[in-house]
Image (tube, rainbow, N blue to C red; front, side, top):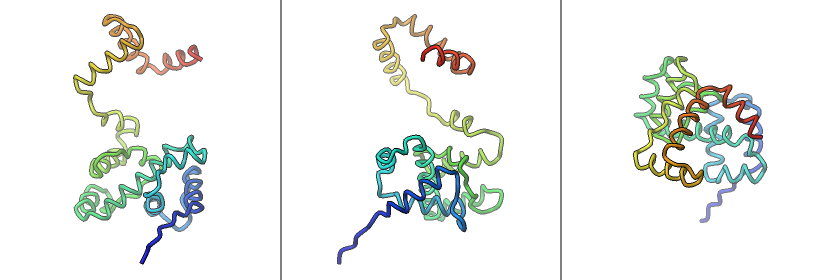
Length: 186
């Protein structure tokens, strides 16, 4: 007996349009919709498919929805995770995610993703603040490799690289400087 698995591209395209419009189908919760979306696209190389149909602009948002569905599916499949999430949740149940909270999801441990979501739901930090504090520090050999790459590609001495990095840190922290440089560089 042969089992055929068919991908319903019409359904997937409808779901993608729904995600692009920040909507959820009537009669479904955000969590239900994200898990259904994940089930539909889990065997599909989604980013490649999105590029092929010209959906590059919303690719991160759609990929985040897929990740939300994956996190929720994995959570419901693990009784320890379910009890962990319910214990951490204010309502005593798995919280309803939304388009803003799923921007926190990364390819890390499911439990770590939930920790980030709960930090966001507490309201003390923004998505950008949480994502910036969870970036891993570079190892010394990674730093050296990146420094060598920059020195070689930009033809810089050690002193010039230090100057450039100091200026770049200042530019990254002061948005007005970054905007001015972007305008001049066009």
